[in-house]
Amino acid sequence: MRRFVEHSVSYCKAVAKEAELRERGCTLDIESYTKLRREFCSVQFCADLFEYGHGLDLPNAVYDNNVFRQMYWAGVDMIYLSNVS
Image (cartoon, rainbow, N blue to C red; front, side, top):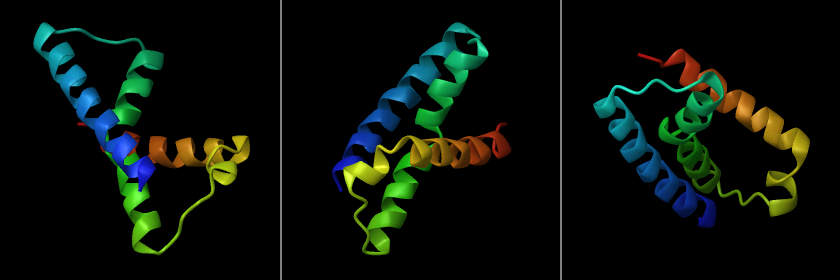
């Protein structure tokens, strides 16, 4: 549940940042866009809800594992890239 709360806060901040950038007409470089888009696409806290809904609680050792993180971010990227409007 801790990750869900952290990701929810992060999501709200990223949505506000994206709205600010859009309002100012700013275009980010690909690295900055990827970082921000990962935050405001809501996939992270959806994954947290999936974990919670299935009665899972991934230990930090798993969640912080480099191989797991690469797979995690690949999944997040695949979802947000398919929903770019």
